Amino acid sequence: MTICSPRYTCEGCGRQAAGGGQRFCWSCLVDIFFGRPPGTLAEQERAKCRAQRSEVEEAHLGARKGGASMIEIHNREGRVIHRSRNLRGILDHGRTVGIQSATGELLPHGRGRLLVRFGDGSTAETQFASFTVLERWLHSRRSWSGCRRISDCEPF
Ligand SMILES: [Zn+2]
Image (cartoon, rainbow, N blue to C red):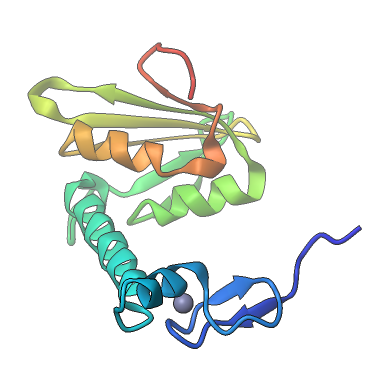
């Protein structure tokens, strides 16, 4: 059984894509079709990701420079097992032990709170200045699908 198909480097955008023998990835083929230089679409996608990332960094209160609010991951006994300045700590720990649930809650003044329960029973909590940004951030965590929820609504 083949798990990974061979990868090649697209001549237009330089990204790795699955397949074999091609010169361009799909998004660069679309560029060529519309008469744009190959790589235009890929660069637009990258710019969108950068903008979203900085929006999250901006809104995530735990990530403020010099701020006292570090993200702490507590084990079942309540002991701190990990500390990080930003959401990366939550993502990394989730990748290692899995995610049991990730819940976004609306706080007063449009703020948001994120509560994460990891596969090993440990937990983390952090706040966002904007609930909307938190919601969008949760929606883009596709690998957490089925474990994500807003308040006590159905998981998505
Ligand atoms: Zn490409």
